[in-house]
Length: 323
Image (cartoon, rainbow, N blue to C red; front, side, top):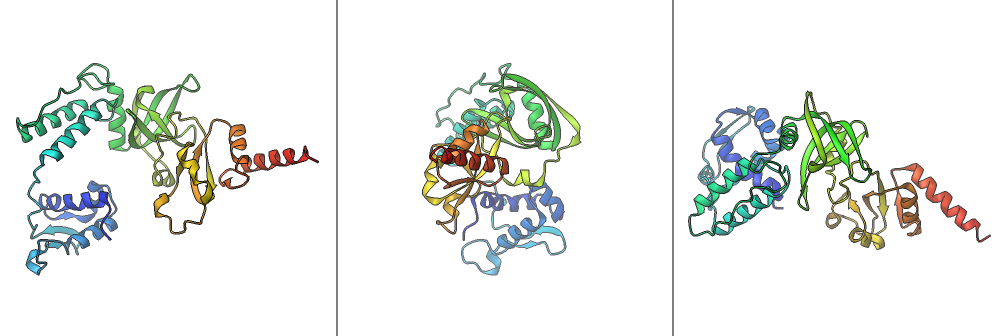
């Protein structure tokens, strides 16, 4: 089985990383790379059997890591920087320009420097498009300080105190949140964080954060909050509730028509006849009860006994009208 795309990208970067840091401790490298020492060890074991065509011992990447420190002997050429093709450079330029249009997604000055370097690398043969100067950020070329504070808190894994405008409730609230990650969707950037006042994971749209202050304490989101990224498609209102539901196979069409996010990849299910667990964002308990009743038990709540009781009592009351 081929490595997943995210792992494959990491494997390509490992050899030049260790070649530039000879003798680095494996645990320190794992922290730098944002993975566990166990995962890094698995990556190194895979790289150990990779190399140049021929696959003789002298063709394979030479790595030593048994004593807790990593040394690279033979790199098989992977320490040399890769050259971008014209298509690859154009793709990166388009992506960077798109990020400039998303409020807070990147450091705008850094993105412009990257665009200039790529354009210089590909030469005058590439048509140079104008770089956006306004986008969604205030102040033209200068980055929005609130957005910068949020990004810094995510990188530093520090808690944030924010003042946030909820468009649905038309109200402003102050919260302390534990940042998890950033997301971009449909031209907007979101902070995914554990909200201490709501006691749950919420998504905060950057352009609705009025102020942000990084606190002198670490971000401590619960472990379960880190396991399943929230979908920006489902909710840009951090106060909307959600419910875990179970969907029978014949009703999976609702994934295309309602704000439902599978909790497992649909295409990777081992048993296609088994029900699928998903997360549904809803506006009110009454709406959710009516929604579930319409499926006659083929879509069921599994995380909220109160909703299940409401569905059962509503169904019993409906049956009672026919008696």
